[in-house]
Image (spheres, helix red, strand yellow):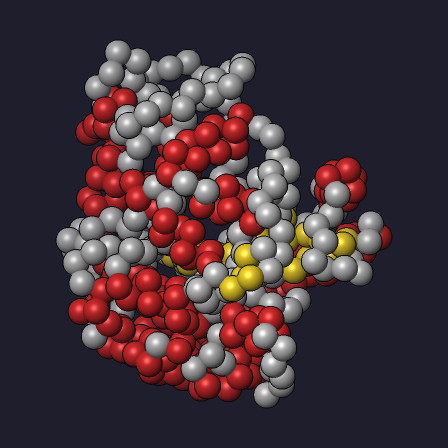
Length: 424
């Protein structure tokens, strides 16, 4: 969510549609070596001794200033509602990524404890209303724009958190690791990941009717920027059309508030008297939020933030195994292929498959069965990818606790809400 961008300070030189398409095709689907991966972790920040209470802005500000002095490997940014995000550096292996991010999180948690603050992983804040912490032109404009579609935008900005897994786009040639196959797989397997890792069933202390309220928010927001491109076998062309036809959220300014146009696509902006520059294109692409976003790599954006200090490792390990190991990728492809019929012609996240994943989690039998096969394939692949025993054990424990029982972390929260025992 924290695609930071500065104001527009470079001279304007308008781009053409042909230039946009060429740039998008060349930038967003870089195929072939090197094989790298990464993860972006968003966290809610709250009182150390009372997790239901958010941290006051003044203490956040002082704590965040201290965090910026830490020698972290990951990039540390702040979300509009004050959530913290750690974005790993590109890593050459799963364990390199886990090791570097774990070390950074240890340092961040220690610094926050000094301020009597702590981190928690929920896809959506279970208790507190959305309150904006950052007041910057980007977020002022984003809020004004998203308010036109309803309250979901503010909740997404200020109350949501995720685990975003970043993977290479793949190779140019066909096969399990080819970029067309990986693009397709990300959108079908994405529904299974939504269901298996759903962890946001509450808002303002009450059940919302969704296992993943966070995913429901994305599906209810501006469809012009949150809907996946239509699948036609050409990911590059589909993404270029999406970028061109997405509404312009805002027009940056060096001083004062940013402009928030109504109903103007980027394609229409190109044809105007004041066409956008290359910098405007780069910024515009950071405001398009489909569940899978190509940024030179594939950014999987559909996974809720997870419980526990190390809960994020499981979705990272599962996703990496199912995409980076050719045998596991082939099993995942065959497993989710029948689910595509249920998705139908409507793209994610608004098709019936994704809606069922967000609403029911693994209580949905088809998604549960698919998850069982995919998690088993991931467990078999992890040793081949050099995963440690601890990582393999974490995935195996998660599989037993949730997948095998048709549950997800959201079910634990719902049981706690209803006063039930959640012990295994």
